[in-house]
Image (tube, rainbow, N blue to C red; front, side, top):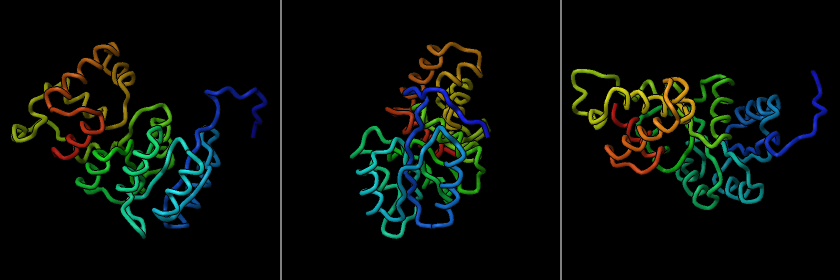
Length: 220
């Protein structure tokens, strides 16, 4: 393995991560994965809500990976409390629960990403990378399951208010794409994508990308 001898800049510094997971085997696996990627540095672990609050208040990580189900409380409520206490914290929910109501609740309460435990390491690092860059991430399989495709009964969905292009952009946002990535994929300017996003949020009466994604996931 090559050793990087270049001076580390602020942009190159690893992003600090805390794992909140009550199953030790899963924590062990995440610890080993993070050790393989120099962009991220594990700075703490917790297996309960109480320990998570202490560890995160002490270590002040950039990203917290949180399981939905914890032995002494709800991981989603924990995520909301942590984001309120530490506004700069980015939260990735890592769970086995793909229930649409659970996904939507997590995003509506402020989680920045949602990944299923059955996904591989590439998916995990894609999510962490999106959060590291200030974006959001929902696994493609999650988005595909809950974002409706055009159909005869689409009028029942609030997304029926949107144009085909706007629905396409919503689906891409649900997959974790930033406005810059959407612009590149659709061959549009970033300003145009941002205007589309502004129009979408106005039509759906939502005020953040998290609310938009939660609404899209509920409107299956």
